Length: 203
Image (cartoon, rainbow, N blue to C red; front, side, top):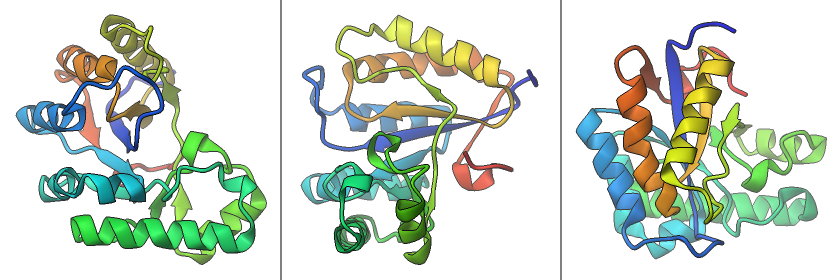
């Protein structure tokens, strides 16, 4: 294990698929990051950007890096070639309209499905994208996960993986909103938080 010196906080900004989703969760996450002076990476679902253009614009305006998280949040390997292209393009168009930013070259497949699929990866590359995975996930989408458990697993995972860890979080779970300050309080003293474009190796 190499001692962690830099960590990439990444958030998937998408429509929730579980019940624990308090109003304004994404905005509260942005408030926490702004208060700590941290830039993160947000993988934005196209349909989410259409539904919440003000929040999407705020992500861009506050200097966070933006990536594409598909339009319909489908499992990419299940889409035909034309469907892959249409989904990527629809998401990009929605993200650009909402944020003024082109998400290329950063893309994260929903659920990570497709990150090892040659056809999906070839379609992403042809469209000017590279897939970004993660090293640590904490199942923050599960409604039974407490903020304390999410934070503890995030901190332990970061320390286990070491320098250059990519942490996967989501913008909508209530547990994530309350866990983020706990993670930052524990790690801010000795770790630099970066965006994925600053990583030496992108997973």
